[in-house]
Length: 460
Image 1 (cartoon, rainbow, N blue to C red):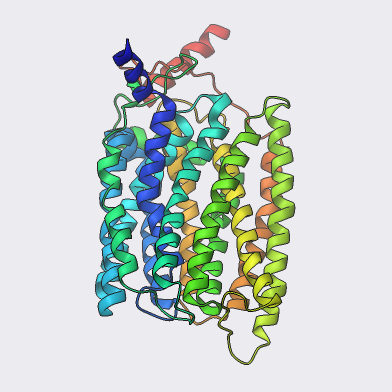
Image 2 (cartoon, rainbow, N blue to C red):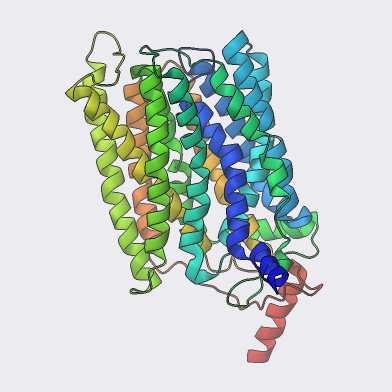
């Protein structure tokens, strides 16, 4: 009896989400922590941004294809391969910090780009596609919240090692050793995942998955998803979803001392976890219809993210008028308090936005058939990567921070009408009636097409 209960826990959706969260903590979470610490061995962030632009450039193409790879070899093995390709980047940052090595950093960034393409698509497919509908918000929040443990651990390590470093510059190389070790654990943890047909949902429903697929099937299915009007309206907000974080990284590295950056990394992880879990719980409240929850949440996000950008613009304008960039340290007075607080405020509501848009992704009608959720997450995360590529490419130049802030603010404003249409319009309608039989050999696009044709004939 106890063994059966243990198996049920092991096969449960919640356990799968926790494992995906742990892998995300070990890989993109630690990657974020490393980037929050600054540009490796350089006082300026330009080389780090160039490496990140290379990573996201590869992801822009890789994520688009990774949904098909996920359907072919399953999300579990896609996640495993993706996690394994992350670790060289962490090692490269260590070598860059200690020895000034630059070629390894770019090679590690390329490896990370390949791995992240696979990991991003597969982790999102699991986190969004596995949970029951009434628990999806909470589970997405848990996934993203555990991921925030990366910056939390990274910030804690850096703060402990650099608490006396009251100047702008690089962190000590010993900071990176623990983070490299954590990054190497992601691939082994991914082996604990269950295959989708073995996962037990609390409502007894099965998880749609592709039992058989091929390149032509995936190509036609991806093309079908690209034409989904609701998904097209979400593309701008996914492009902008990570854009502002690059400016924020440059802002932190340029104007703050090492120990204040370490404290910021630590605290942003705490506010990020709070944002993820709170947003997920609110999205699952049953007191109001899902459509009402979606509209209300977006209006809240629209107000506060716009307020965050406006606050950033005010602070950045003051900084731009100074003869030379300040080196803000803990206890430096009112201006430091405002400049530091706006960073945390911005991070909180960007995490609220991230949780919300992944919940929106799962709401797409016509994307619930076998393999469709993997394709959808791959396509939208590809656009997310395109936005990040542009952001890091801009950050790799010597373009002033004030201009980068203005570009990020303008891009956020550009997303608003499209997202409003998606949330308040009636675009999200399922035009087909496809029954999902995940455990039969008919789990392919051709089988779905036949079912639609038979259904249509029956109605005539």
